[in-house]
Length: 131
Image 1 (spheres, rainbow, N blue to C red):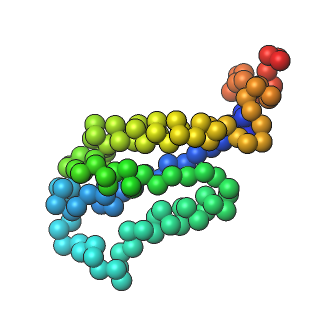
Image 2 (cartoon, one colour):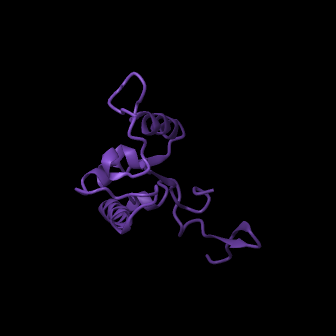
Image 3 (spheres, one colour):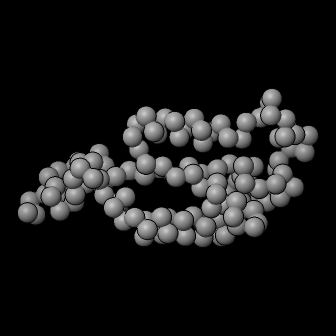
């Protein structure tokens, strides 16, 4: 669908709170769980597996762990898995920076909005008469 609309789909991989925050910053995290036990826990696995899948599908993707880890404080709420204001700001800044560096990522290299305009009509994607 994104190609037909002259766009390129970009996927943002959102980390789990425990991937970017220390357990002590998360009241809901069970204290008896030791994430340093690499035989039981692989905190890289979600992004690794999803990244491999997205690569096979030839989709652009970005891992937000770096943006969150650079914050200096936990971007998730202490008592639930929702972002704080800081978390929202970090993601907004990441997206702004990433796409202002390379606006071409916003459109497909195969077709552009100008060459193939389309619009939605009654929930359907239709070719626009605007030429």
